[in-house]
Amino acid sequence: MEYEKARKWLYGRQESGIKLGLKNIVKLLKAIGIHETNIPIIHVAGTNGKGSTCAFIDSILQQSGYKTGLFTSPHLISFCERIRISGKPITEIEIAKRINVIKNLVSKWDEEPTFFEIVTALALKFFTDEKVDVAIIEVGLGGRLDSTNVVQPNVCVITPISLDHQHILGDSIAEIASEKAGIIKPGKPVISAQQNIEAKAILESRCNELNSSIEFVDSSLNFKKIPLKGEHQKANATLAIAAAKKFSKSISTDSCFEGIAKTVWRGRFERFPQRGGFDIVVDGAHNKEGAIALISTWNEIYGDNKATVIFASAANKDLESIIGPIEKVASRLIVTKPETPRKLASYNEVIRHVSENIRVEKENSVLKAIEIAKESKNNILIAGSLFLVAEALAILDNKSQNFEPSDQ
Image 1: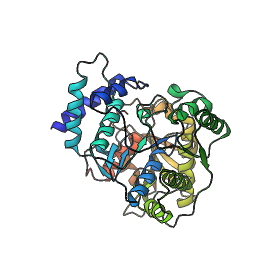
Image 2: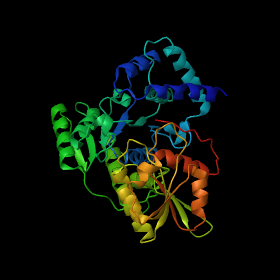
Image 3: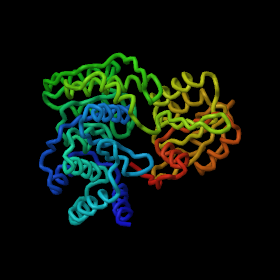
Image 4: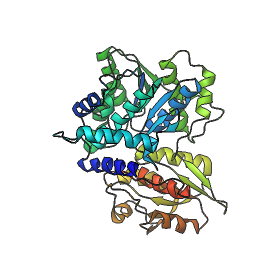
């Protein structure tokens, strides 16, 4: 009950929306007793692959003997997923205790901190109290003004940069890259995925200004075992290895490959074989590059076999760029509405971008959409929104955890 009360109060902070800037997070950290974040940090920004890259780095460092903290967002099923120590999610008791402390501290502030500022502070406080050896911190949005940018990283990591969240970060790759480059700190090394010409120039310029070295990881290693499917995940894993080795020269290549092989990161081309001989595939692709990578992986595994696609998307996304790739593997598309406070694209907005030769249906219940799709005994692909993926996973896990939908 204490956890539910604390979570309800925290989720209530989402009503104030997203407010970029570091003033409130600095104030909040001081209020909870953190005047400097002295934990060694690997800070990860980018557009696609941030979560997977963080998970790979975390697993490598655990395999190398480090006690790790991992902070990612959003969660899929349980809020506890966002904050982990050596792979284990924070407990509901620890969350309730810390949220209640923060709630009392900020109750009389003229401007209460936002949801994400509070969660960031909670994570950094927990990692400090637990005395982790290193924390892997995923940027929430952008970089320069994201509340995680209060940390002083040992290594900065930039995953591939592309167009996303243009309404907040800017309409061009150059503008978005400038925001991502905001995590780069003076004299601290940067490990980057290969970027397009504009993004690469911005990152190099920023590193020159701050006397920081930058290494672009331009090829994928050969992995004997990699649990996350797709060529893009091999690139993410290669980036993670470069970041881990930059963090510590003592980390061995064997530990890197063993860590990659043990990585668990849900909702990324996650397959659920069904008794009827077909698969349900759940993937968090929610922008153009993510959709292209998803379809490349689908073709790699399923060839020309088409799918019944269950689809939903946030209203502020470029639907055409997401639906275009996904419909290439669709024989049928079911538009649904996951349980989330986030405004979703309407059925009419979605079908405007779907080819006439694809049968399109509407089913507001995600559970019902899955049940209807199963009847055909064709492969099923669930994609378009992390909020859809989250609810689908909760259903496919037979609700072994309470589903805790969030707007951020």
